Amino acid sequence: MHTHGPRTLPSSRPFASSTAGAHDHRQPPPRYLQSQQQSLSQYAGGRTPKRQMPSREPEEILIAVMGATGAGKSTFINLLSDSDLAVGEGLKSCTTRVETANTFELYGKLITLVDTPGFDDTTVSDTDILKMIAVYLSSTYETGRKLSGIIYMHRISDFRVGGVSRRNFSMFRKLCGDETLRNVALVTNMWSEVTPQRGAAREAELRTDPLLFAPVINGGATLLRHDGTLAGAQAVLAHVARNTPRTLAIQRELVDEHKDIADTAAGVELDRELAALRAAHVAQLAEIQREMEAALAEKDEQTRAELGAVRGELLANIAQIEGDRDRLSREFAVEKARADERVAKIQEDLELEKAARAERQLEISRLTDEMANSRTLSAREREDMQRQLVDLRKQRSRGGFFGKIGRAIDSFFGF
Ligand SMILES: Nc1nc2c(ncn2[C@@H]2O[C@H](COP(=O)(O)OP(=O)(O)OP(=O)(O)O)[C@@H](O)[C@H]2O)c(=O)[nH]1
Ligand SMILES: [Mg+2]
Image (cartoon, rainbow, N blue to C red; front, side):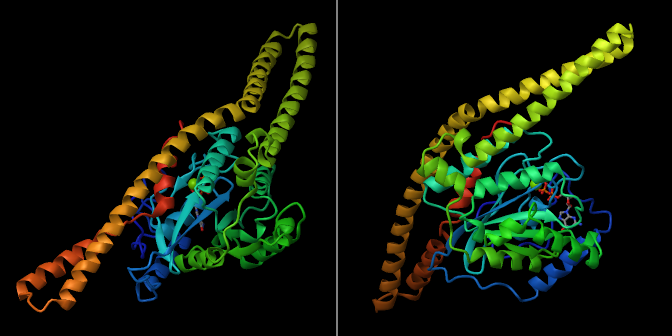
C-alpha cells in the first residue's frame, strides 16, 4: 500500500486507484475531480516547489487529519501525497485505523500526513479508535516529535451537524486541548456540492455557532476552504506547515503526566458519551419491559415475542457499552507496549542508518578531495571516481522518520 521514500511531485493521478472504493475510471470523472486534474496539469507545467539542495536534510513535519466518516480525509491525503489510502463509497466507514501516507516534500519540508478514523466509525467502536489514536500520538511524542498541525475536515454540504458528527468534534477537541488550537485548521470541502450562497451561509453559521466552530476559532484555529484541487490542498498545507509544533493534550496527559488513558480529557469524554448511551438504552429497556407486561396481560403473544427480541438487542448493546468502558485502559496498555517495542527497533535501525550515512559522507569527502587535489589521476580513474560519487549520493536515506514509525505502527492494530 505504501511506497517508501519522499516524493517531490505527485503523479498525474489525482486520486489513488486503490481497490476499496476507487472511482470507476471508465466513467467520466465527477466535476470536482475534473477540476483536480486540471490543477494537476498546471502543477506539472512548471510551478513545482523547489527541492532542497541534496546536502541539507529538510525539516520533517507531521500533520494529522481528523474529521467525521466520509468527510474526505483520505481523499485529501491521497491527493497531496500520491498515496493509495482507501477511499469510501457508501455510508460505511472506510478508514478503520491510523494510517501514515507517503512522505512528500513541499515548501522545503518533508511532510507526513496521518489519516485517522472518525469517532463515528460504523465498524470500529469509539473505544478502539481512541486507543489507536492515543497509541500513535503518544509513541511519536515520546520520540520527541510533535504535530505541526491538525486538519479537521468538514463537508460544507452537511447541512445538519448531527449528534454523531458533534460527538466526533467533541472528541477531537479533547484530544487537542485548548493550547494547540493555533495549530488547528478547520477545513471545509465539497464546495462543488453546494451553491456558493448556500455554502457561504453555512460557513458563516459554522464560524459563529458556539456549538460548532466558534469556540475553536476564538481559541486560535483557522477556518479554511479546500476547493478540491491540488493547488487548494497545498494552500491549506501552507497554513499548517509553518506552525510551531505543539504538544496535544492527549500527549501531555499520557506521556508527561503519566495519566491512565481513562483519566485523560478524551478518555473522560468518551466515558461520558458511553454513559449517556447506556442510560438511553436502560430507559428504552424499561419502556420495552412495560410494553411486554401489557402484551402479556392482553395475551398478545406476537407483540410480546417481538418486544422480547428488541429487549435482547438492548441488553446486548448495554453489555457491549459496559465492556467498552471497562477495556480502554487495559487494552491501551497492551497495545502501547507493542508499539514501544516497534519504535525501539526503528530507532535502532535509524541509528545504524545514521552511522552508515556518516561513513558515506566521509567517503564522499575523501573522493572529492582526491579528485580535486591529485594531479596523477588518469581520465579512466576520474570517471570511476565520479561514478562512485554518484552512487554514494544516490544512497541517501529516504522515507523520513515519521514515514517509518507510522508504517510500523499502522500495521499492528488487530482489526
Ligand atoms: N464532491 C466531492 N467529493 C469528495 C471530495 N473529497 C472526497 N469526496 C468523496 O467523499 C467520499 C468519502 O471520501 P473519503 O476520502 O473516503 O472520506 P474519509 O473522511 O476518509 O472517510 P472515512 O475513512 O470513512 O473516515 C468518497 O466517495 C470521495 O470520493 C471532494 O472534495 N468533493
Ligand atoms: Mg478515510
